[in-house]
Every structure is written in C-alpha cells, then in structure tokens.
Length: 634
Image (tube, rainbow, N blue to C red):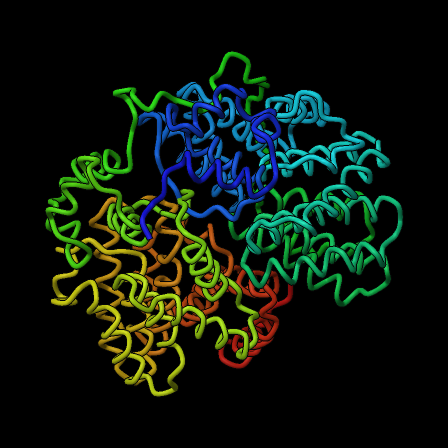
C-alpha cells in the first residue's frame, strides 16, 4: 500500500476516463507540461494533481509532494483559511488569506484560484462587499482554468471542486444582482453535474448543500416557499448529521424563513432563533445580519432579549481581484534541487519541533526506516505517512494521497463510519465486515483503525476498555498515562485515549476518566499542534471532560476548566460547543452567576436545535425552571 508514482497515476486515470492529453490538460496546465508529467520528467504540485485527478473523475486519495516549502505552506494555509471561513471566524480567515497573498500564492495559479474563491466567500459573509465586485472576482477566478466557459452551457465539462464552488457562488451573485434566470440556469447544471459525479460522499453532500442554499434563496425570491422549505430542510438535515457548520447556518435560517412565510410560527420560531443565538455564540456577524433581516424585511417577532444582545459587528475587509496571470501552473522539474518531498517535510517539521526520530517513530516503524523516509530513499505507505504527520501536529486530512483501489475503499469506509452519524446499524456492520476483510494482512495501523471501530459495540464498558487497550498497544506497547507528555501521538491514539476515558466514566470510575482527560489536555498544551489537527479531536475531549466534572459535582473545577481551554477553538465546532454550554450554564446558575448562566443556556438550546438535537433544549429549560426557578424565555 505504498504511495504510487504520480506519472503512472495520472496517465492511468486519464486513459480510464477515455480522455486525450489535450482534454485532461485543458485549463489546468499546458499540453507539453502534462506530457512531461506523464513521462516523469516533471513533477506536479498537490493543487494541480488534484485538479487533474478530479478532471479524470478519479477517486483520488492522499498524496503529498511539493515543489518547495512555500508550496507546502501555501497549500496548508489555504486549508486553514477554509476551515476558519467554514466556522464563520472571519478575522482569522482574513489573516490566513493575507499571509497567502504575501507569499505570492507560491507562484501557483491554482492556489490563486482557490484564494480568490475564499476571498469572495469572506466578502460575502462579511456582508460589506459589493456584489458586482464579488461577481467579477469569481469570474476572474473561474477564467484561470476555464477562460472560454459559457455560464449557460457548461454541463459537458469535467469540473474540479474549486470550479464547481466558483460556479455555485456565481449563481448566488446572479440572484443578488437581480438576474434570477442566470442563477437558475447555473444551479440546474450544477445539480445535474453533482448528481452524476464521482466525488466522495462527504464532498458531494457538502457541494450539494452549498448549491441548495442558492436554490432555496432563488425559490424564496420567487415566492415558492413550500419548494424552498423542502430544499433547505432536506439539506439542513444532512448537514446537521455531518456537523457541517458553514452551510448549516444559512440552511437553518432559510428553513425558518420558509416556515414563517407558510404560516408555521412555532417551527419558524425554533429555526430562526436557533440561527441567531448560535451565530451569536460563535461571535459571528451572521447574528447581526439575521436580526436585521428579520426586523426590516419580515413581521417575525424579534424579542427584546434578541434585540438586547450584542452581536459581532459587520466588518469590511480590503478586497481586490487577481487574475492569476504570470503565475505558474504547479508543474516543476523533477531534477530541481528545491523539490520538497514528503521526507523533507517530515524531517523539517520534526527538527523545528525538536523531536527525536525515536520519539516520532515509536511503535510505528524503526528509526532506520524513518531515516530512509526523511532522506527520500523510501516512500512510506499511506497509513504510516498519515501517522507521522499527525504526530507532528499536522492534519493529514488537508492532503491528497493516492494508493490502490483497496486503499481508496478502506478510507471511504473509514470516513463513512466516522462522519455519518445517521448510518443504520445493519449498514455499519456491513461496512465493518468489509473493513475487516481489507485489513487482513495489512499494517498494524490499518488493523488499529478496525479495532477501534468495533470497540464501540460492547455494552459492557470494561469490555470496551479491553478492546481499546488492545488497539492502543499496537502502536504504544509501553503506554503509561502518567508519561503521556513524553510521547507524540496520532489522531487515532488520542481518540483511543478519549474513548477509554468515556468508558471509565461509564464504568463508574469517574476519577480515572478525569485523570485521562487532564493528561490529554496537558499533552495538547505542551505540544505544538495545528488548528486543523486539533479540530479532529480536541472539542470532543473538552465536552467529555466537562461532562465528567459535572457528573462528579466538581463545579469549581468545571468553571476553572472554562478558563483553561481554548474557547475560540471550541467555537469552531457548534455541536460540541452546544453540549459544553449545556453543562456549563447549569454550573454558572449554581454559582449564582445568573445572567451569564441564562445566556449560556440560551446559546446551548439554540446550538442543539441547529444540529437537530431537539430534545436537549426542553431538558435544559426544565432544569433551569425546576432547580433555579429561572424560566428561559428568548
């Protein structure tokens, strides 16, 4: 399951898709460049590689090789900027985008194209940008790879994800510029294209949800509220299941707005207030936008409490376009001394963090094997590549690797089991059985993935602890919770520790659970971990630790924990933030900090409603009324 050669991958994908070199290269790179890539004379940056593979309709999975350190830094910062935008953390997104521009987009026009898309999203979500300026910039970005595209007829093209998202954003701007027919024409083609595309199910659902936001807005503008409700609510439900914050806010608002126009006041009240208070909880200016829209353009009853709360103000961000002219196409000479291999990346990150080879590779591979990887004499298999990145505090999910079809299927199953919260039990068992067949004879890392997934099954928490300990022992045979700070941990190892803590809690060993959570947080505080990696596990630790302290009536420690954790990080995940505030608000009320408690409780109710956990809000209201004689009216 080693990482394969790009030249073979791209040539094979092109031929399998029945494409000529000219068809595959169109708009991405020159025909000569593609020819040099396929013969191994030239290398290719991650952005260009992904664009080529998407054009060929290939299910690409995981492949990081860079033209240089700037290439890596620019690529990763784009993913970080996208993460902050998805979490509606606009100031942080702006900082990343400004840094990418200062780097000159690593002289890669595809990075520039993605940067323009994110810039336009930032302008739209700040609600301070000119719609015409946004439209023009989006069109410039699309023309970087599709200079001759016709917006009324592009259904025959093979599109990348960035191109699809640019077209979706253009459809939205057509609507805001008073051209609903143009919006509908683009939407219809995108919907048809996505329905027949071969993207992974998570990627496809996300792009369909973004398109649904635009289409629901169109339907509302046309007065077709029933159809708008059907569209918005269906995709709201899917995004709530996948905990996708970016389109979820708008889908919730559109769902509530349609209910309001259809004369369903109770349902409208739930969703519109859920969006306002959720956005206010994460310091998003969308709260102010929602409130202003409801006050000025509807007869919805905006309560005095909603009016009294301070919402993040609208802030304008400097904006200018960029057509990508003069930038390279992400193809580089394989003989260049500046090529930044995966081994170079591992060695440099390890050295910067002052980690020894022995510490980094412990339980994963031998030090001599790591030396060969760092020297470029050996390519790791995908699982090892991911594990090394994670132990260096980098999220492997930002990258695109490529392995065999077997690899691709394993990862598809893995992400379905992790992210799809609505999978029926029968389907989950089928996926697990298939995963077991795939891991047979493979590395300990693949087997560890499988063992962790089936560890959820036993009802007896001690049996779960036994299974999780077995899985952890595959990569940390000498594990000692008291010496956690002396280790470097993968995402899976951190997840196992979190699951063990939960299992100890379920077994009634609250003290042991608290011990585990405390040491995990100490590990996070001590080591330099990137926000994209932290987002994969830390918020769940925060929530479970909070829950454990609450159930032990250790209220003072829970309040102190709130001061210790990274609140800004917690606000990037509305699902876990809602759960955290559920317990924290009650502790504040117990401490007679009533005003703070009410606000935290209201935000918790709204956040839980936003992600479809409709039972939590009534339970919290009941607790406040019965225990503190406080009626939560908002």
